[in-house]
Length: 245
Image (cartoon, rainbow, N blue to C red; front, side, top):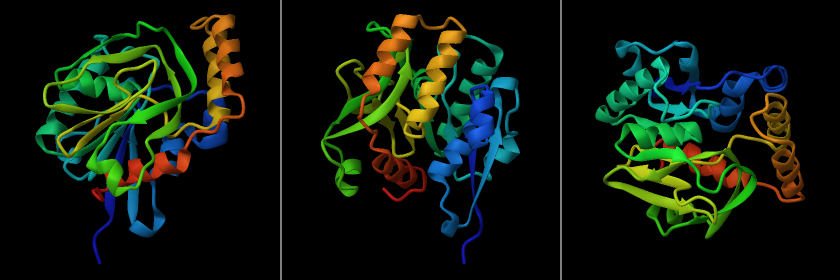
């Protein structure tokens, strides 16, 4: 019998009232996707965007870390963002498994020496088809050549960190996924989102004047009947984070 495996969500976003009520916050959304009860796992959360970070002693206890999305820019110099970059460099040196999603993908790109900035194509909101490059990761999981994923971002990784490998691209974004060594993976889209979460997020962005009405309407119309490949993304994320690849 192995011991209880501990994983950690580094929460970079402020929970909306809707997501708190329906899903137990974004932490709850990630746990629903990634936790496997039969494996004997414990999932903790640190709200890094409000300055809550694990101590140096605590980080050694965790098998893996997940960095969430955020309304902040990954190239910003807020105190918590600078502190997060330092933490990620420590985790990299310890070869801890790290999965970065959206902002998490971008902040990993920055911390490891790549470049992050505004996307030249502007906002990408909706369900996007990403094309997977040939990789042992996808072969071992019998993945198809492309997967659909929910996107909601206006920043992107412009330049990969040295020694990083691009895993996927889309017609709008050159770096949809990358890996660094065998322990770090970034995904620009949101494998954890549901269409319901995205629709409420679009309304929230519109109400806060972050996006205009035309962008919101276009994003909603593009959702159409397409469904993201949630089960494939779940298999990929859990297999990576738990060392099964």
